[in-house]
Length: 229
Image 1 (cartoon, rainbow, N blue to C red):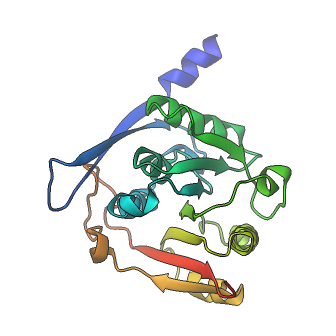
Image 2: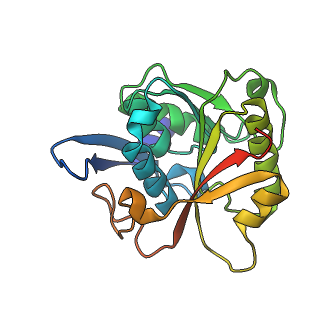
């Protein structure tokens, strides 16, 4: 009981408000419980707000579509998609039960009881991966974080896009090094790569959705498909 009380005291709830650019009265408010914990997935990163902004501006395309968020963590983009009428599945590593618990906590806070949370570990063809329904959109914010994980991330993305040839992978990543290129890696895996300028979806700002993010960080938004589809 004491451990549970300590855990709850470490949770900070943050609010994000996405507004229609031409009609600020049309808005969506999402609450995200962040955990004061060193694990990567337990708080909102700059890339998540940018991807969530893209999801919000393309919400009409997502209505009744099946959407999977990879490496969801606190699940901001996936929750926005669910609030906009998509059938959403949130996933994080099966080896990180606290991150999966946080996905469920985010759903509970935002009254999304029908959102499924599954453990999918990058690079592993697990039963949960094989049992996924047909997908329309795959989301991933800052999944290209640790260079040693890149190949495993791409194994999973490539598998999903080949299994769902009409699907797209929407991803944002933060430029942290000039020594590697996400686009080059995607091409290596026979995946197309379309860069989306941030101004196209009103994300070329230091502060989005009423938050202080993404700040001064350089974030890229790309859409990926299987070249053979």
